[in-house]
Length: 116
Image 1 (spheres, rainbow, N blue to C red):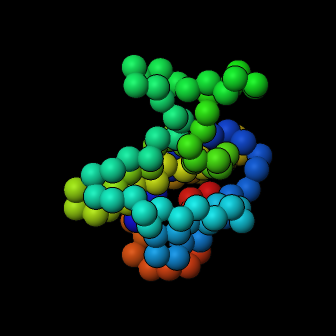
Image 2 (cartoon, one colour; image 1 turned 120 degrees about the vertical axis):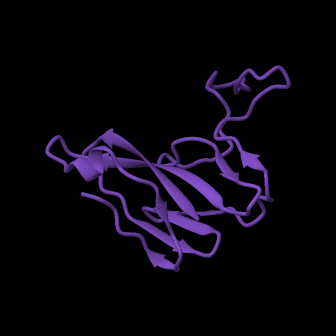
């Protein structure tokens, strides 16, 4: 699994734990094991014409991935690597590594160390 970090000035804390094809973000567990090679799970549902589907009650776009920490579409490339974009909260005094984070290749189950 490759975690793509998207920095965001935010006072919240984030913990990430990985177990196989499952990622847990601050206690919210998302299982992507059903996502096949070359497939994408869009963060927001779209109509056939490409426009966002809108909830008729709330008038908000319909989300496919219900987690505030997911920063975009989740996809599995042709080689089988799962790509998960995640918001990385940081403070105004964060290090350059936290403000301009590199992707993290997860090779073992367990907690993921994040730049601070």
